[in-house]
Image (cartoon, rainbow, N blue to C red; front, side):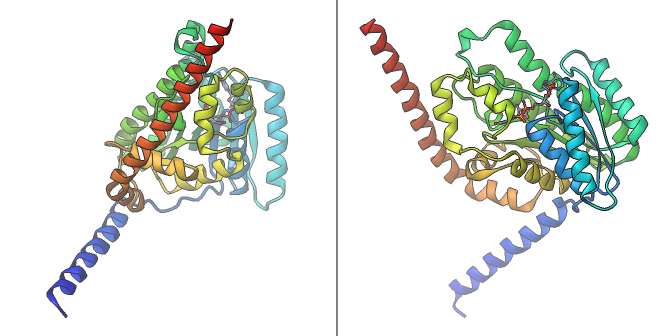
Length: 334
Ligand SMILES: NC(=O)c1ccc[n+]([C@@H]2O[C@H](COP(=O)([O-])OP(=O)(O)OC[C@H]3O[C@@H](n4cnc5c(N)ncnc54)[C@H](OP(=O)(O)O)[C@@H]3O)[C@@H](O)[C@H]2O)c1
């Protein structure tokens, strides 16, 4: 064997040993949901409702939290239908609460939910909404309500759940951010800020709760075909629509399945599609290392993805410039 081949052999061996070592250090055994209690905020619609069906199929009991009682009742019946199709399924209950109102409301929901279905093993924060508008057109009420639901609504309910999970010394927490929480986009000055804040919250909490065998996952969905997305599209500036279309439209069931699979093995980021993979790899910064594959992608693909991102940013810039020129031209005609 020549010296060159020998060095190559050593190099490959070192990389394999490093991957296996890191995999062992950071991997979390896939946890089972059978007989466990999963609390889902925003569980009456869209991604949250799909998560409810998914965890119910895996044998969990489910608490749904949202505001509209009629929608909650309908969602409860649907999830009960899913449970009846498997053997040994759990129960479904719901609580109507406005999670953007105050901390006490959120704390009460957790206490009431645990009184009937036992300690929460998994919390999925899905309640939230997006409105895209030009910065100067965003009303103070809209900015505040986006921050209140998306950020504070997740913050307070998670606080109460963490108190309980620490006693159990186990748990899974999921925050639903967005690809718009990883990167600032036209029209999303308030929404991106609220969803970005969730990522910093998740990173800090991850460090605090790790010794208690509690994992924290951030879901960054792409555009997903839900009632919420339909509503969001009604007022979206054309620039935001054209830019966000780049990643395609996903089904809530697929986003939900990936969310649950990744959260149960303790992955920090969960997302869907190639753009999501690229963004979470690129934007990881000093985020926690939770699995070997993500870590090696971040180390070896970071530079390549940064180059690809420059192309995306250039094409987004072109969209903004073109629409600006069109507006200027139509103003001149008027
Ligand atoms: N769909 C997408 O393209 C997309 C992309 C990225 C991120 N996301 C994020 O994913 C999450 C779910 O989105 P989705 O599209 O599935 O939305 P959705 O279909 O509109 O569902 C939102 C859920 O949140 C509940 N909710 C809203 N405000 C609430 C409040 N103040 N208190 C309690 N519950 C509240 C809603 O019920 P009530 O109205 O009855 O309260 C509903 O159950 C959101 O956080 C969203 O920002 C979505």
